[in-house]
Image 1 (tube, rainbow, N blue to C red):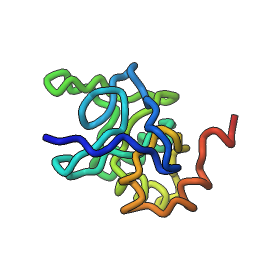
Image 2 (cartoon, rainbow, N blue to C red):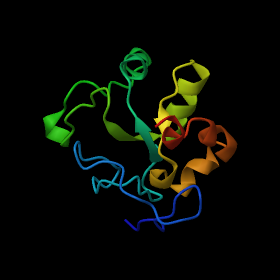
Image 3 (cartoon, one colour):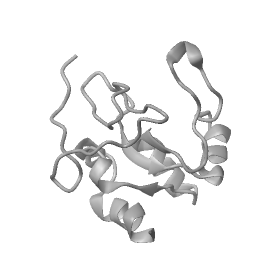
Image 4 (tube, helix red, strand yellow):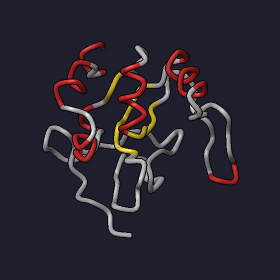
Length: 126
C-alpha cells in the first residue's frame, strides 16, 4: 500500500491533524491517503456536536467507539480526518465542520473545491 505524497490543499507539507484521538486512514495522525483509501479520509475537521449527530443520522457514526478497529469515537472539540464526500454531505446539510487546511490532504480537492474549503478554514475563526 503506497502512500500518496504528503501535501496539503495549499501545496505545502501536510501537518498532523490529531494524535489524540489517533486519526487518519493510516492511523498516523495525518490525513494521508493512497489508492487503497476508497473513502478519501483527507479532510482534517474540528468536530462539533451538531456535525457528529448529523453524521450519525446519515449512517456515519463517528461517536460510538469501536475498539476492535482501534477507533475511540470522536468527541466535540476533537480533530478528525474525515472522508471528503462526508464533508461535502455535511456542507449540503448545513452542518459543515471547520477545516484545518494545512492538515487537509490535496486529494480532497478531487471532491471539494479549494474555495469552498477556504470558507470554513478553522484558522480564520480563532
